[in-house]
Amino acid sequence: MLALSAALCASACTGEFQHDVGVEAWRQGHPEVAAKHYAKACDKGYGDSCYNLALLEFEGDGVPQDDAAAYEHFERACAPTDLDACYYVAMLAGEGRGTARDDAHANVLLNMGCERAHALSCELYGVRIHDGLGVQADPARGREMVDRACELGGEQSCNQAGILHWRADDLVRADIFFARGCERDEDPTACFNLANGQGLPKSPEQIEALLAKACELGEPDACTASDPE
Image 1 (cartoon, helix red, strand yellow):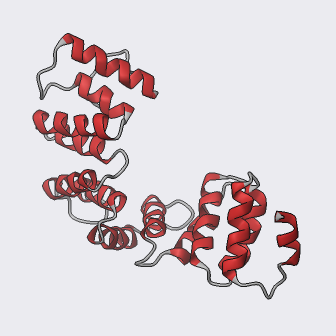
Image 2 (cartoon, rainbow, N blue to C red):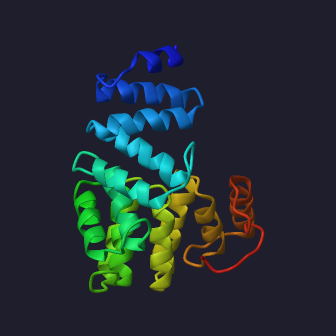
């Protein structure tokens, strides 16, 4: 069916149709075929395909890993309705990967995303504000933004919030956020950091259980006690 659909789809096919064929190809385990259809749909202005193609290029899945191509396609998908794409544009621009480094552009996009409750945008923008990347450093405001990312459910955002509070010597708040990351998100690093944190009282049995959970979830250093990192 996939081959037939692809054969029937000539240049007159809509971007949406090309996108659907790409999605089906990816679902069947053919990312290289999916990429071809996503590219055609993206060229027709179908933003979802630009985003999916960019992910394949960013990860090197079915196509050569290519930050420059990924940046181009993420940027074409970036819009107030596609905050995931804008997040990737900001991340790559902020690191100078696939494009010239542009801290101002990164911060504008991340601020837009955070204002629209995009958790990962809040987290990355908070870290950049905390560290003064393209903006005057404001550690307190940066921590607030990463705290918000945790509240919004950002993956690993609670652990990142804990790290920033730990660096500010607020060990109690650090452990509170590590606990959220460990319990809610089952983040192995958060479990490991909670086990080693000194903000909340923990019995030897609780520490052992946290390290065991971190180990089970895949944290390689879970059997070694150290400061949060």
